Image 1: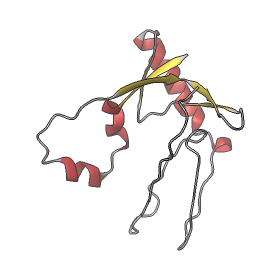
Image 2: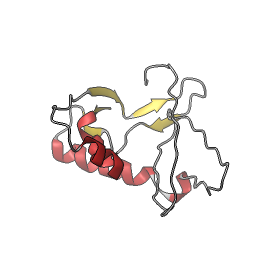
Image 3: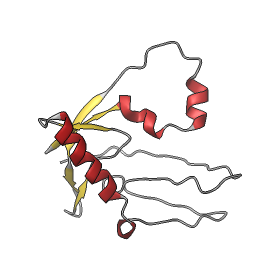
Image 4: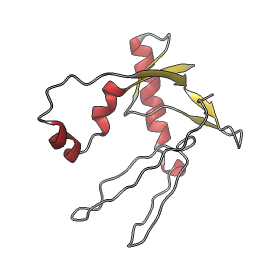
Length: 129
């Protein structure tokens, strides 16, 4: 199965700061779409993992809207089951690094009153397969 991922869905994951920053924009945002496998194989380990997420995966390619939405909802719920998660207990100096080829970053806003600083690097890599 293949899924259509769309930048138009990114609103789901936008922060309050993102919305405030972009509120004055008058240009129409360009929508980008890409089709990727629903399950991808890690190129180095050979392990298989779901490659869908609520912030970008819009639909299952070739599936009716209703059936595709139902399947995606099941997959989204499955991904965040406690036995598949890792919670970082943040303290000053904590550093977390993860491989997005096998991980769904699902932040929880449980740090009220504190500033979250995140630096992202993206390495050139392979095409999801």
